[in-house]
Image (cartoon, rainbow, N blue to C red; front, side):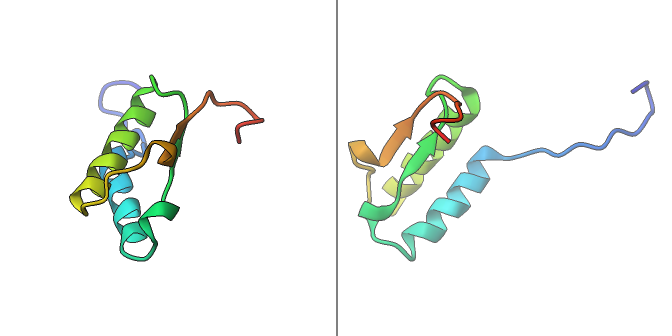
Length: 79
């Protein structure tokens, strides 16, 4: 697009989305049943979401256990 042209876009806020989803689950589900499943741990979006997940759980007094966070490469087998 050139200068002055309109361009449609969609922006995703990883932190707000993750906080809202995690809060919803925490208020309705046992802590042991809440998991974060993300892509590669070094991926910016995955890391941002994982950090927001952990911070939100901690805010509810529920630090995530080691098995509650999983990271893998994006492949068909991983889902």
